[in-house]
Amino acid sequence: MANVDIRIRQVEPLATPRQVVSLLPVDEKTAESIRRSRQTVNDIIQGRDQRLLAIIGPCSLHDPDAALEYAQKLKKLASEIEDEMFVVMRTYFEKPRTVGGWKGLILDPKMDGSYDIGGGILAARSLLLDIVKLGLPVGCEVLDPIIPQYIDELMSWSSIGARTTESQIHRNLASGLSVAVGFKNSTSGDLNNAINAIKSALQPASFIGMDGEGASAIFRTTGNDCCHLILRGGDQSPNYYEDDVENARLFMQKEGVNPAIIIDCSHANSRKHYERQKRVLRSLIDQVSWGEKAIRGFMLESNLEQGCQKIPEDLSTLKYGVSVTDACIGWDETERIVHHACDLLRKARREGGVIQPL
Ligand SMILES: O=C[C@H](O)[C@H](O)COP(=O)(O)O
Ligand SMILES: C=C(OP(=O)(O)O)C(=O)O
Image (cartoon, rainbow, N blue to C red; front, top):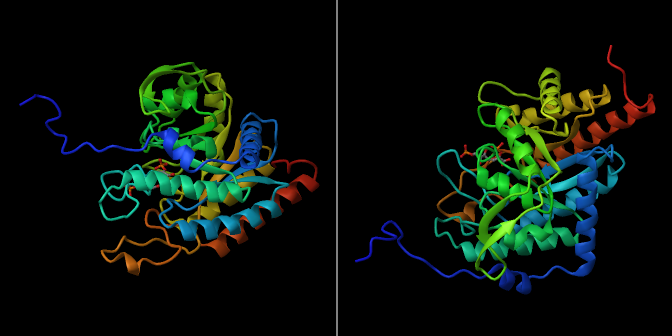
C-alpha cells in the first residue's frame, strides 16, 4: 500500500473552468458593461470618481430565486442613487467560518453536507450571469484560490476576508485578480496585516495554480494597484469612528499606500447586531460630508427580509429571503437608509462641496 493520500477518502473529477465557461458564457454586451463597472470601481478606489462605492447584499446567497429578486430591487435602487453612489451587489458564495458551519453555495449548494461542488460552481456562475445581465455589477469574497477561474470574468470587485488577509496565497491571488480587491483588517482589529497585504499585492507575484483547462500552471502576475483597506471592526471594538478612520488613513499614507478605505457596516462594526448597521452608515456619511476623502465606500449586509435563520433539517421549512449566515437588515430598511444617506450627501454638496467640521 502506498504511503500517500492516507487521509483522502475520495477524489472525484470536476469540470474544468473552460467547460463551465462554455456551458455558461457571457455575451459581449454584458462583458462590456462589466468592463465599464470595473473601471468605475477602480476610479472610485483611486480617487478619480468622488461617488461612494456601495457594496450591498446578503451575507451569503443560498437561494438563487431570492437572490435574483433581491438583485432586481437593488438594480432599481442603484439607478435612483447613481449621482452619489455606485452600487455593487454583494454576491458571496464562499464563507470562511470561525470554526465550522455551512461554507456557502459553491461548496455545499444543497446545504446538506453533501458538498456537490460541481453543482455549486454551476449554480453560482449561472446566478452571477443572471444578475450581471440586469446591468448590476457583482462582488465576491475570494477564498479558494482556484474558484476565480470559474467566475472572475463576471466580477467587478472582490474582497479578501479578515481570516485570510495575512495569507500569502491570497495576497498573490489579489496581485493577479482583474478587479479591485479590498483587504479586511484582521478579526483582532489589527490593521498591519491588511496594510502589508495591500503592499504585497501591489507587487508582481508568481504562484502555482490551475489554468482554464484544469492543468497545473505557473501564474505570473502584474501586481494590483486597486487594493484597498476594509475596516470591519475587531474583537475589542468597532473601527469606523472618526479617529479610527483618521488613524488608518495616516498609517496608509505613512506606508506609502493609496489611502482608500471601505467601511463594513456589519461584522464587528455592528457588533453583529444587524440593526446597528445604520449607525455605522450614518457615521461614515457624516465623515464624508465633513471632508474625509479616504472613505471610498461602505458595505451593508442586507436581504429581502431582516434577521437570520438556522439551516433546518427539513429544507422545505427555510424562510424565503432570510440569511442563513450573518443577520441582515431587510429590504425596506435598506432602501430607507441608503436613500437617507444619499439625501445627506446631496445636501452636503449643495452646501458647498462638503460641510466643514466645527
Ligand atoms: O460573514 C460571515 C461570518 O461572519 C463569517 O463567515 C464567520 O462566521 P462564523 O463566525 O459564524 O463562522
Ligand atoms: C466573512 C466576512 O467578513 P469578515 O472576513 O470581515 O469576517 C464577510 O464579509 O462575509
